[in-house]
Every structure is written in C-alpha cells, then in structure tokens.
Length: 478
Image (tube, rainbow, N blue to C red):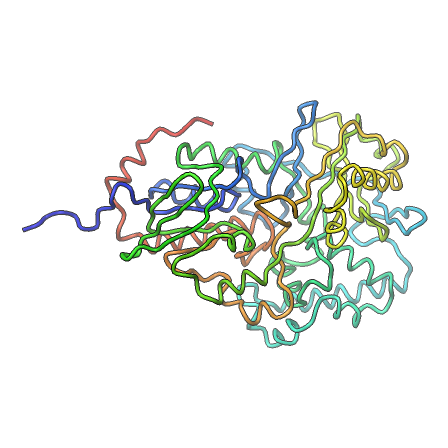
C-alpha cells in the first residue's frame, strides 16, 4: 500500500505569489506568510507603490505619494500601531484662503466663504449629492434602482443641471479635482456617488479635522511599507516586473518575471488596472476582465512640495490651506511635520492641468507652481530652500494617481467583474475595495478579502512540512 502524501507540495511550488509590493500586496503577504509559502514580486527598486517618501537635504522626509489617514480608517490606524509608528494631525489652525482671482478671502471650515446665492446653491447641490450617495450600496453600486440612469451621465452633466451659479459649479469642480485627480466630465455620476459612499461622504473626503486629511504618519506612509518589507526577507524580489503568467495542465501557475520564474498554486495581483494590463496571461483572462481594465484609466496628479526655513504663513494667522479657481495650483496645504522647524507648503496639479504640466520642462513647472505659492502667501513663498514634485502619470509603474476612474457605463456593464476572482488568480489593490476606494484603507480591505479567498481555497492542502520550515526561518529584525 502506498502511504505517500499525495497532497504534499513540491519544493519548488509556492503556495502564493503576490505581484505588487504596495501597501495592499505587502498587507496580503503579512496576512498569509505565517501559514503559507509565499513570494512578493515588485517591478520597482523600492516598495510602496503609490506611496513614496522624499528626503530633503536636511534629512527631513516628506510624502510625495499618498499620505493621509482619517476617522473611519480603522485598519490603517491598527496597522500604524502594530508597526510601531505614530500619527499627528495635519496643521488645521487659522484661516483658510479662497483665491477669487484678485485676492484671498479668509474663511474657516470646509466650505469657502462666497456670495449668499452661490453658497445656497452649493449647499443644496452638496446636500442632494450626499443623499444620492447615501442610497448606494458600495458593494454592489450597479444594483441601485437608478444605476443605469446615473451611470449614463457624467458628473459634469449632473453639476450643470444641479448648480445654477457659475461659482458653485466652479467650487464643486475644484473639490472633485482634489478627491479624484480628474475633471467632472471624466467621471460617471454613479462612480462619483459610489466613491463618496465608500468613504462615508463627500464632505468627509474633503475635510481635514474629522475627515480624510486629518492625520499624517511620522516617518511617512512609505515607511510603513518599508517596515513590512523587512519582515519578508528573501521572500521579496525587487526590480522584478512580471511579464507573463502561464497556467500548467494541472492548474498551477508559472509567473515569469525579469530575473526568473516562480511556480505557485495561487496568485494575487495587487496592481492598478493599467499595470495589470501589461501582463500576458496564458490562457487569456476572461474578456470581461480585460475590457474592464481597459476602461479604468488612472487619475492625473503632480504633487508639489516646497521647504522653507519656517512656516512663515502661520505668523499671518493662515492655515496654509488654499482653494483657488485660478491655477495651476488650486488646492494647497501646510505639510510641515510636527516637531520640525521647517515649513512645508504642498500643492497639487490635477486633472487636465496635471496632463498639461506633465509635458512641460520641470524648471518651467517649478516656476509656475512657485508663482502660485507666492500669489497666495507672498514673495517669501517664491524662494524655498528646496522644492520637489512628482508627476505620477509619468511614473513608469503607476502611470497615474490617485486611483483608477470609472467613466460612464463601466459600473453597470462590468461592476460584477471588478472584485470576483479568476481562480487561481485573485485581486487586491485599492481599486477592488468596497470601503475607502482609492485610499490606503481600501487597499488594506482588498488585501484582507484576497487573503481570505486564498485561505479558503488552500485550507485543506497546506503542506505541514513547508509550514514548519517557514515558521522556523529567521526573520530580519526591524
């Protein structure tokens, strides 16, 4: 009688390969690694994906990718604590500025001070939008009774019908640019409603204290990814872009990357859709999957940060927050780190403006950005000690930020495809989240869902010998 364990895993066969070492892929690895043989493949020379730190000459670091966490993002706060990091609130004291083309008008809170008719108009439109968003089930937005109607129109069409004054439409559009890094005409109304609902409300997405921009992380968000990566040791492979995935006759996968081949039973793609499209699959993925990814372009954003000797704008009672109808920088924040002497001003180029400046000489872009900073805060803002910007649309392994967008028709035609697996291939990344889509919190939720699918699929066939080897392997100290 043959007593050999027929379920034993060959030594060269991993349980799971994860493609993408952003926060979603790393979180999935962290969840699975104690119990499964895994590997993580990352195309860049660093981890973090759309999270990235820049180090200034004085040693200070600043996030030039995603950076904020706020109330309701419980997974993020839990991860921050587990990894030994701390948060501090974004500076939110003093007056904000609304630049009307000739001067800055001071105001407090989320909504700028504008004329009474425009203010009433904007308030009514916001309230209407929030009511519609609240009626959406973020897990299945395509099932809403009005999903077809809302998905056939752009957000710009809805704004034209629901904002009667030019100023209200203008300010609403600035808010949309800040949240989506896109123009209102690029978005399905249904997607905008879903996105707001997934983050609780549009007001929360726009707010600082009590909102999505409330807190920052000492050491930067990319520091979280670096700390998680240190736990992986040799299971992490950098400079390893995946170019093809082939399915073997018995159902296992061969993952071909620059530098080698890995065999695995399950695969997680923790990538933005535009990057997943680069990979050749054999046999091909379902046509609906490919067509969905083709219809999910990324937003367009250039993040700009200037460092000064001190945050001089605070002397004038200003918060550093700006909303402006005149560009190219329409949204700004005080990005100074608590406990540091330097003052940091941060501005965004978004949507069509970002696409224009993506093709502009970097020195010209720097000049135009600092012209804006000086317009809002005086000539001193034109002369920073250091300046850095990051064009995420040109970044080769992102090609856009903050997240993939849904133009009209995508949710209602392809929504059911978005989060389903194509076993043995599973999907993570913030674009497959039901909560906080487009945010780090959403990336963690998606990773947890994908890891749960893997556990369910492999729970009866774990090779106990390989697990014992995994558990006794020395992990690099943090």
